[in-house]
Length: 199
Image 1 (cartoon, one colour):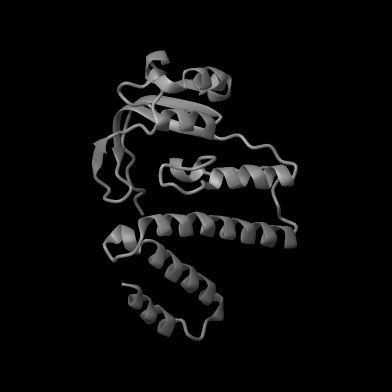
Image 2 (cartoon, one colour):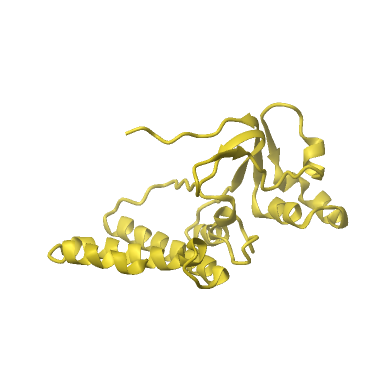
């Protein structure tokens, strides 16, 4: 419950440098309420989360520019929905498209790739349980799956976009949209589940 954070407000009442972090924790807590059984709209939460990613990114850019500490290259690692261009499976506009448009304004190039599994196990990010690795793009009946050799592979999705448009009626909707959301697909077979870093 959000009111648990009231204790933190009291504990850090005399430390103004913590107030920004506490505000962020409250915002995050509200966003994740629908995902943790505390009511609210999942769509609205997803939309608020994507918009907050943009706000936080722009705040970091502003700070880096003010401190003359803006790097020439930026690397982002996000889950597939956040990283997508265009409308995501959660029906909001992904952060990846925003970054590409921001980069264009700043004179920067953007290359977006998705790393996928094909078999093996993964750690569930919510429960920590080890489960079979489920691919975002490569379902059992995927046309892409038919094209993949054994072993690790990189697929240049930009090169197959014209063919994907021509074959639109025979492609799964998620697979079709992902071909345009990412520039490359990296497929790793028989992956092993990650484990928590021991402290």
